[in-house]
Image 1 (cartoon, rainbow, N blue to C red):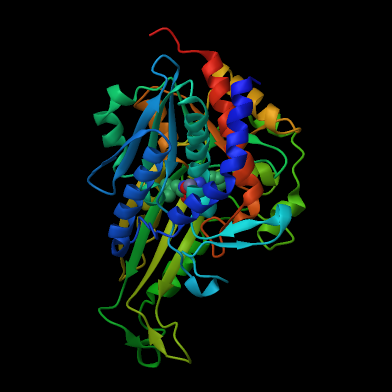
Image 2 (cartoon, rainbow, N blue to C red; image 1 turned 180 degrees about the vertical axis):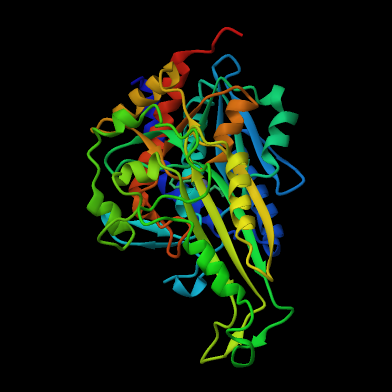
Length: 464
Ligand code: BES
Ligand code: ZN
């Protein structure tokens, strides 16, 4: 480690309380990208993020897109390797709000000592994580006039709603962005003492479906038994999407599925299944038979009902046959599966089972494939070495069951590989009430990003 990095890390330490304050300011903005009611909040959050980047020594600009704005900031050493940092400033809705112990957009510090954490929607996903590299870049700026790499920061405002404007933006700015490597901070650690770099992400297909039957709601005594009940039919069709072994019954669903390249190496990981289950409030796992939990979440495709509604769900009883039922369905995809084909196969599966007297309305919310990241690269080796200076445990190369569409777009549009270096934990409750981010993770994440800057500079700029 150089003397300069030593001084940068001292700066990280002396800045830490202010770093946390700045994170809390960002967390207070309810930048829910899926909800049109929050459009101004999302735009305000983009401006605030741009101000924080400018304050960290970068030149920052908010770019309009057909959807929510993109924030782009540049700076650093023009002769160093060009590193594109990515994070997203949008968050998931806070619903169900009544299950939060504190106001979802009022960041609250709870716990003591090493257990201190900030509770707020977006704390771990992804504002806490993006602020780690922003604060690391700030420490470099305040210590040495700037980082020894050429930096572009890209902060997206639509990640949680499927990144509809991302590809167009990347295509439009392909020349200016042109990175040597990308650093994406939106994933997890192996555990709070063991850093991780994610080398595989699952893809996603998402459908909104509505099954309609009678022209209007009916009295279930007058009509029940003699007319189609869309909710009975919808739940039956959805219930039959898995067989007794947990396998998905859609024709062609498993066509082309292959084991990810890293799967062999995952077998040797010491996975704490009990802790994983505890983070979900459960004691046992379920899923495809003959597969371990890690295989189920990292290397096997899934189909989940994410929401279902219809009929009467208020107080007391109401004897009614609802005219329609709705559901939201998603599939997590693995290498070898073509998202468009899976989407088409699922739609065909539903349509072939259309009950007499019913019709479907089906809308897709985007498709993206599983991603495998290049593991034999000097960038990855440099990042692993930098993490080694911060943690006594070796870095784990892991998979991730979630999806981060930008990683695929960086590959296909910019021709660039990503380093997925994240500091979330399984029990962060991302997308759930009481989302939190441990301050230990925030702190170590800033230090790690500061060290990674120097390690990437050490790889040098490839000949252009
Ligand atoms: N940060 C998550 C991805 C993630 C999930 C990383 C779990 C580590 C563990 C990301 O913000 C996310 O939630 N992505 C969505 C993508 C979708 C809306 C296209 C997802 O995976 O559901
Ligand atoms: Zn995220």
